[in-house]
Every structure is written in C-alpha cells, then in structure tokens.
Amino acid sequence: MNPQPISERRRGWCPGVRRPMETGDGLLVRLHPFGGRLTADQARLIAGAARENGNGDLDITARGNLQIRGVSEESHPELLALLEREGLAEPEGDGPNRLTVMSPLTGPDHGDVLDLAQEIEDRAVPLHGLPGKFFVTVDDGGPMPLDALGADLHVVATGEDFAIAFGSAEPKGLQWIGTASPVRADDAILFILADFAQMRIEGRTRARRLRDLEPALAAELAASAELSPATPPLERPSAPRAGSFQIRHGHAVLLALPFGRCSAAQLDQAAQWSERLGQGEIRLSFTRGILVPGIAGEHVLTLLAEASRAGFITDGDDPRLSLIACPGRQGCGSALTPAPADALRIAESCADILKDGAILHVSGCPKGCAHPGRAELTLVGREDGRYDVVPNGSTRDAASLHLSVDDLMTRLLPLATLDDLRRTFAEDAQ
Image (cartoon, rainbow, N blue to C red; front, side, top):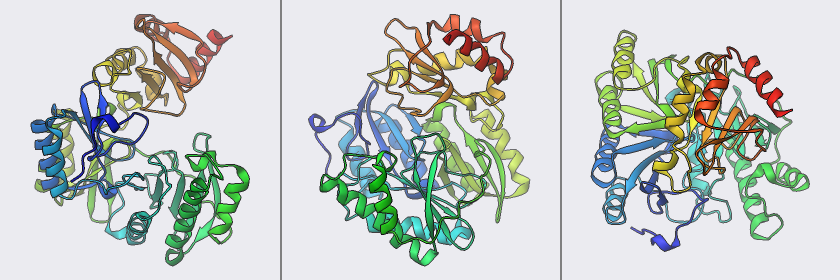
C-alpha cells in the first residue's frame, strides 16, 4: 500500500485510488476497473465504501471509470487498504492508471477484442514515458462506436482484422494508418506505444498526446508498426446513451445518469438488479451510465420501470442526455458557478433543441474538464455568476456574449430547432 502525500498531488493529471485529487468536496478517488466491469459484490463494496469513507456520491466518467467523492485525509488510508485488498487499486507508477477503453457491450462473444485489450494492458506496464492521460480505444465494431472519445490510438474490429488510427485534434477526426490481423495487432500497437514513449524520453517531442505529435514523427510511428494498408471501417451512428439492446445472450439495459452523477444507493440498486435479473455483473459505460447485461426479454420492462423510479434515465431521447456539466462550485474548488443546477434550469427553456441533437456544455470554469471538445452551445462560468457564451465551440474559444442564467433562458425559450440556435447565436456574434 502506497498512498501519496497530499503535498505531492497536483491538478491536471489523472487521479487514482493511490493518488486522489483535491476537489471542492474533499478528495476524489478514481477506480479504473478493466473494461469498466464490476461484479455485483464489488459494486456493493464500493457503494459501502462511498458511504463510510466519502460523502456517498460517485461519478461515472467518460472513460467508464468510477469516482468516489468527499473522501477525507483521515478516511483515505482505510479506503485505499480496502480497495487494494479487493484488487481495485491501480498499479504503482506514473503512467496511465488504465490504458484501454471498450464498449460496455463487448462481451464473451468478442473474444479477440477482450484478449487484445488485456494484452495491451499487461504488456504496457513496463513502459515508461506514456503520459497519464494517454489511452487506447478497442472497439468491437458494434452499435456503440468509440471514435468520438478522443483516444490517442483507436482500434476497431472489422471482421477478420483490426483497423488502427491515430487520434486527431478535430472532432471525430481519425487518421487511419493501417490494419493488422488479430495475431499481430498487439505487437503493432505495442511498437507504437513504446516508440512514442521513447520519443518523449529522448526529448524528440514534447507532445503529451498522439494527436499533437509532429507529422514526421507520426509517420515514423506508423511505419514502425509495419501495418497492412489502411481500410477505414464504415461510419456508424453515434452510441445510444440509454435503453435496451438485443445481445447474443438476452438483452442489455443501459441506464443513464444526469451528468454521470451516481449515489451509493443507485450503485447498490444496480448490483441488486444484476443479480436478480441479469448475470451478476454491471459495466460502467463511457456514456457515463451503467449497463446491466444478460437480461431476459421478459424482464426488460421491469428493469426499465424500476430504474426510472430510482432516478436513472431510461429513454434515449431524454433531453437531459444532451447536457454536459462539471461538478460545479460545490464539488470543485476551481468552479465559479453551480454548473449542474444551472444546466438543468437552462435545459427547461430549450428541451426541443436538445431533442433535436444540440449539446449544451455548462462549465464552472474555463478548464472544461467535463467536455474538452466542441458543443453547439458552451457556457463558461464567470466570477460574477454569469456565463461566457460560446456557440459551436469549446471553453478554449472566444465568447460572443456574457449572460446570466435568466437572460440565457429568455433567449433560448423562443427557439425550436438546432438551426434556430445556430442562426440566433451566429447573429449575436456578428
């Protein structure tokens, strides 16, 4: 057991079980289970630990990790000992706490995908020089694509082969570099990871993400993998964020959570459903929800109804699923505004636009931790309680207006479509 002293912790990195991060409501402890998978017993243990050692609140992140909030300096050693004993603490070291992200629908019938992800995790442990935020998506090619997650390396099963791409700074942008057979894919990927790490160690690049690597060095990495010619897979619709899926063995039900916030009671309830109606396992989803696999068809409606009463979102068209917000002023020392509460208020005035596909990102400060990319409407908290308004941009872009929540609602209320939103704020920017 090796907790890190509070004096050695800093922001801008990836917290874990051993190295928590200071936030507005205490220490944040992040668990990184492989594939986002937890047994019902593990989920119950974590829920109990969140009550005993934290404030009872948890988050599911955009990489399918689980955060325990409100941990204190005094309670952290006990929590660390418990999670380490249960095999839920990350390995020692400064590299990524978990390197791979998969779809929660990736199951036993995707053996090549699971094996590849495990090989990447196991073989990358000795590597030094990979930044903590570096990650690889291993996509099964199914109905929950991972191409929009912003991974450094994106790997997709295409049938007999794996297509491999570098991430890009552009939204959904991928640079396809080649394909590899299942027996060669792990070697090819490890060559890329090792060479990138070595470039950083030798000082040949200061890039912390592959998407920021100089073009000549990116070409060198691609060549080192000795891949077959690139064959980009067909584009798929964006991943559903809630509802039921037909899978090989029954159904799977994806339960969404507003802003990924989960109570210990909800985690307990999901564990209970997985045992009573499923196969005793839950999977944390990159959509910031919980997937319960192995549900018999006759039990799907029962689970959806019970989950709705427990505060989960079960309808994929629910406008709250188009809201993104950080923990806000109460949960983060950097936040200037109560972002989640303001997001829900603002959503009341633009439900039709959200159903039309708009994404509303409300950030309590300019860091934009909850969503580093663009959104149809990004709002950045200010010290005076108002928001900088950035249409079709991110927290890093220039604002066109500075409005209070009430003024924002007044402007949004007459708008009915995504085109109305784009047109209105385009006029404001002129």
